[in-house]
Amino acid sequence: MVEWFITKEFSTTSISKIKKKKYFGTKGSGNHSIDLVRPLTTGVEIREYAELWEVIQLQARDTNADDEITWRWTPNGEYTTKSAYRIQFIGRTRTSLFHPIWKAKTEPKCRFFAWLLLQKKILTADNLAKRGWPQDTLCKLCNSEPETPTHLCKDCIFTRASWDRLISWLQVGSLPPTTVTTTLKGWWKKCRAGFDKHNKPFFDGIIIYFWWNIWKERNRRTFNQVSKSEEEVALLTKEDFQQFSLAFS
Ligand SMILES: [Zn+2]
Image (cartoon, rainbow, N blue to C red; front, side):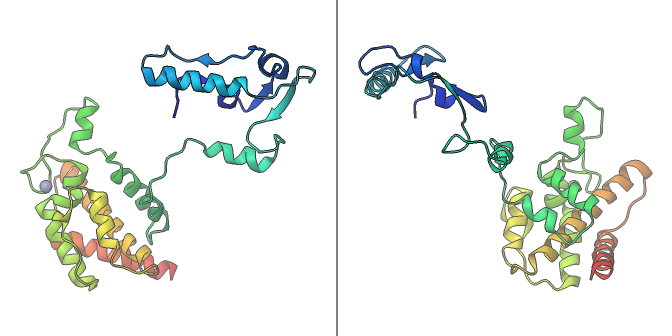
């Protein structure tokens, strides 16, 4: 794909003015332009430039037509509210795994936390250091590894023990171990793959409540200097999930 030129089709404006007289002269008149956004630097680019030039030369022209305004986002050039709505989403990126967060059986504040967590944006020691905030770099749950979002919510020995206790109580069957992948998102994906469409939002609710309670335990230890055991954190997670299920069943 050539990337070194701009034609009117590639204009960044929503409404393009088609200048038929200037850009669409009679065949073979040579009155055409290709605006380069940077100099051509390779043989391939020069060849593509020559080929494009040849194509433009062959276009039929109408020297008598007036310039006209057209809407570039529909095939026929006519404005529609539907097309105007759609162009708001041009350039967006999709991550399939973020979508289930918003359907998880959990409270909105926990969903939002999970969304931040999976983007590694929660304020663990590594992220605080990036902001220049002095902080003990060690994980408060094990006091032996650097505190990062992935370590805190997947790899920490405290977290793994608490998770094992939780899934044992909930009898959700065997799930992939936290060591099955290096990323939190990857582990979540592998775990939820074992549930059918109906049960996925429930599992997502459980794991998000678990992360939420791990985070609260981290904050208890960081700010209040009090701590709970792996089993107590698992129990709090179980209670959170059960209360939510009762309230919204
Ligand atoms: Zn740890």
